[in-house]
Image (tube, rainbow, N blue to C red; front, top):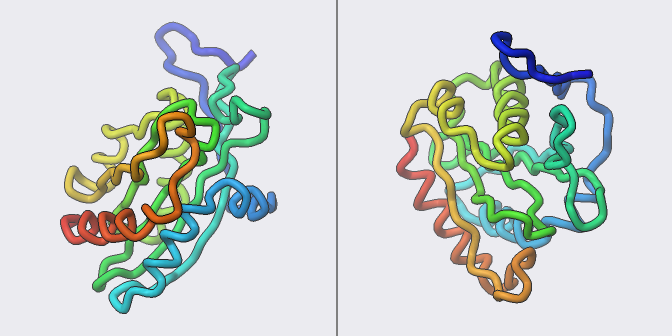
Length: 185
């Protein structure tokens, strides 16, 4: 079994993004429609240069089921979107919350070392699952500094439909992302 051992810490998980050939784009299109629309708004902004979009399944950690959606057991995915915004290399991380199990803000990161980015995001997502779908602030501060990342709340959802955002809320979300990114240093 892959369990924690007293005095030796938690079990380790490997998240190999270099050799991952899983195609999760169909999950992105199905589950992140409003986020995708928000990304499109950023792409249309003259200060935003789109770099890349990738989707990954969250890593499995021990016996936890947090890496799976509670609704149908399919993999919970994270969208990793990179932009150059006003000469800053920014990564947005958006976790699939369509099952409304927990509200999770969009995370914006100021990239300081692009060569370490894949490794760092892998570790952040691994800790995210370990921490019960909570952004690992200590690890984020270690990697990016206290002013190198920010959580951006999602727009309000209808009370009966917490996993779904209203399409007309996307513009405000994109604007909040741009304001938040300006504060990163």
